[in-house]
Image (tube, rainbow, N blue to C red; front, top):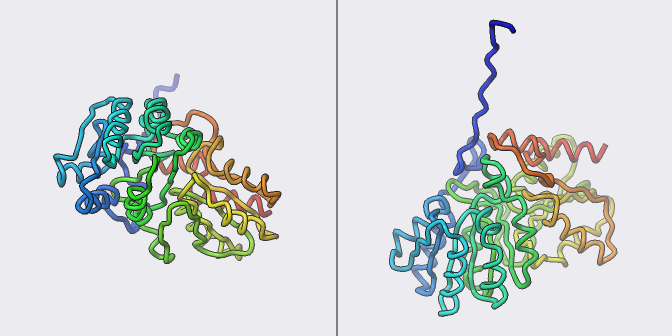
Length: 333
């Protein structure tokens, strides 16, 4: 053996609560916690529950403002969802928060049977959606959209940024029925205010037009799509971005109107497994309507993902801005 061992660079994993914002990017702190607290000041029916994760879902701001309406359920996600259903039966509007991996995988049957089957007015808001933590399969929720889409009557939302979250909170509170919303917490990027955007429950919005490529995106991938579109513009590739914050019910009218425009490559981009998310929902919508554009998908693979630093993982699994640009250039070649 060689007596001199070369030192390899140490791979640092991202913090569980690390922001997904890029260096120098505009952010807003705790948009969910602030929006919910503001709304609760106007509506005494709102209560907040969590499974030992108030600080890491920004619900601690609500707890400080309304301690009598805040309920800490401990590390018991099934109890969290059952209690939320009970509050809803009493006419309250419960917001239940935890991590997406725990809220969906550990509590699925309780959401399905206690909340959704009775169409109870529970708002489930789950942090660390998709690949937004580097902690590996125990915390990475790559299948949450597929699971929640499969529940009858469940509304499913994947916001892009702080503005999306701020505007979604009062709308899902006013909506009568169960809602699952992916949650970005901490210092959340602010992107959509530059596009004269307003969140509307159930509506998709064209953020920019383009003749060569249509990116249909949701969640943080809309941010990546806008960055990729700006980069591709320098190479004379004209990219349109259609943001789909509501995964279920889909805005099929807008999707079909944009998808059937001839001559464009259609790319669906999502921070979710290739199985059961937005891309398959869009493809099904196109197929049923007889719309058949050139279709590609940017998503996470159907596998258990590695642990590591988020920028490294986003490059590895194809959802970084550079990876999106590279994929589109390859498909257009």
